[in-house]
Amino acid sequence: MKDLFEPVTLGALTLRNRLAMAPMTRSRAYDAGKVTELTAEYYAQRAEAGLIITEGTQPSEIGQGYVYTPGLHHDEQVAAWRKVTDAVHAKGGHIFAQIMHSGRVGHPYLYADDALPHGPSAIPSGERLYTPDEGMLEHPTPREMSIEDIAQTVDDFAAAARNAIEAGFDGVELHGANGYLIHQFLADGSNQRTDAYGGSIENRIRFAVEVARAVSDAIGPERTGIRVSPGNSANGISESDTPELYVALTRALAPLGLAYVHVMELARRDVTKLIRAEWPGVLILNAHPTPDSFPSRPEYGVEALREGVADVVSLAELWLANPDLPARIKAGGPYNEADKASFYGGDHRGYTDYPTLNGDGQAGDSLSEGQVA
Image (cartoon, rainbow, N blue to C red; front, side, top):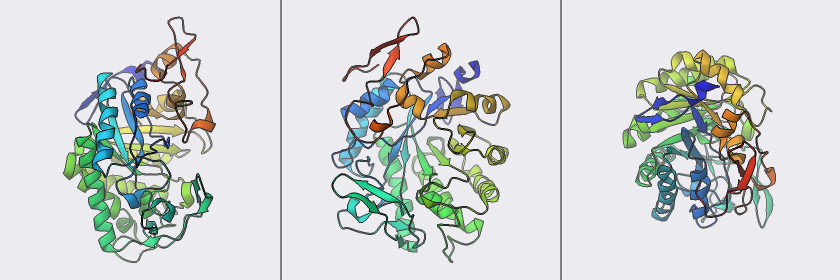
């Protein structure tokens, strides 16, 4: 697996290795979408990654989809993120903020004015929102976005990207995967508009391309990436034309010169290869041989790396449970098992207290709260 530990150029950055930490929602921003000192510790512990991509971070209030997720639309949120980026950079790491507008995957419970979530069409997700005091709430039918709403949302993405740079991030990743707003526009099951943003593939990719162009104009294409998940049915998404859709999207994005495209691959290596053929830049691959093969393992992406299908391999759950993941991969394990009960919400337990390896390759002491490793 030595190929994982070769440096690679991504945008204006030289990554120390080809191991990225994939974005993972952790739901610990309890105070008005502000991350904490514990968040800084969590990411700094994992700064040996070539690139860290943060948990999904909303660009606006209406973009929030879950309780206790962080934002990048208020000055206090920006200041809070600065502690995270400073901690990662102090350890020699690189970090991008994932900007995630949840679209129809939202609920009036989350918004100060009890507004309906927005979506490309008035089609509900069929999913539910967890709340700490009212239990599980059905997602309502979203408000179909007007042309003015779309323009405002594009502006919100660009503003959040500028805020990310102000907060010290090396760049941003646009969340175009897993059934959130950009993906909702791409997929014909959730986008049944009859205007310039719906119907044909050319129209359905328009929103994604406009967001990518606005963000790259705001902060530079070398600081902008995008994540996609071809064929992913998460959050009620359905696509009838996956190969053609993602070829068209990739062709439209390629002239922008973005830093990377990040593919969450769910048993669709055929589509990944089509994207690779159209994409001239860095391709990050989060590979799952089957839709239910979680967590993704290092070996899943190594073949693609060596074949040139991917340039960087991203892992999620293994990074969550193994802050010293590069050392563990070099040693051939062992790997900590993630505590699924502490994935969302909570304190340092299941967040910053996973054990690391000591010098002889055995599990060593846990990282203590407040320690940056």
